[in-house]
Length: 222
Ligand code: PMT
Image (cartoon, rainbow, N blue to C red; front, side, top):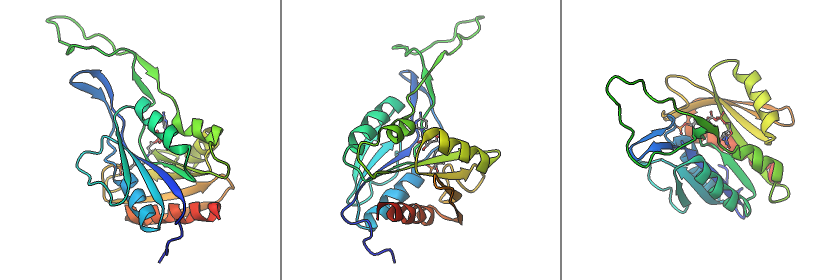
C-alpha cells in the first residue's frame, strides 16, 4: 500500500536498551526488547529504504532481511554507531531506550558483599544525549530526525516539552502500560510534530505505528 516511497533514501533506526556495566556480571539497564525499532527497520526496508539498524542488546530478535545490523551495548557505543551512520542518512529514528546515566566506575572484578558492612553507594555520571546532539548538528541538510518518549504521567505535556528540548522534527510519545510499549507486540502513541501537528496512532501492532512514522517522515523528505 505504501509502494516504494522510501526508495533511494537511507535511514538509520536505533532499537533496544543500553546496558551500563557495573562489573563483569552486572549492569544498569531497562525493559526495551527492541521490537518497536525492529518493526521500524522492517517496514522501512519494505518501503524501499536502505536501512542501518543500530541494535542495543536485542538478543533473540532475528536480523530483518536486507538490513545492515550494527550491534552495540552501552550508550557511548550507541552514540558512536549512530553518529557514524547518521552522516549518510536522510532520516534517523531513535527508538532505543538510552540510559541517561552510567556508573562512574567499572569494577574489573566482581563486586562482593562483605559481612556486616553496608553496600557501597553507586555513583552515576551523565551519558551523552544522542538525539539532542544529532538534532543540533544535522549532518545532512533536510535530514528528518525522530525521537521516541515513553512516559507514565502527563504524557502529551511531557512529550511537547521533550520535543522542544531535544530539537527533533517528530517525537513519538507512547504511554508505559501493561500491553503496550516495553516488550509487547502492540503499541499505541501520538506522534508530535515540531510544526505543532499531532497524529494519534490507535492500539495495534508495532508495525502499524512504524508505518505511520514513515508516512510522516516521507512527507517531510518530499
Ligand atoms: O523495544 P520495545 O520493547 O519494543 O519498546 C519500545 C520503546 C518503549 C523502548 C520505544 O517505543 C520508546 O519509547 N523508546 C524511547 C524510550 C524513552 O523513554 O526514551 P527517553 O524519554 O529516555 O528519551 C527520549 C529520546 O531521546 C529517545 O528517542 C531516546 O532514544 C533519546 N535519548 C535518550 C537519552 C540519551 N542519553 N540519548 C538519547 O538519544
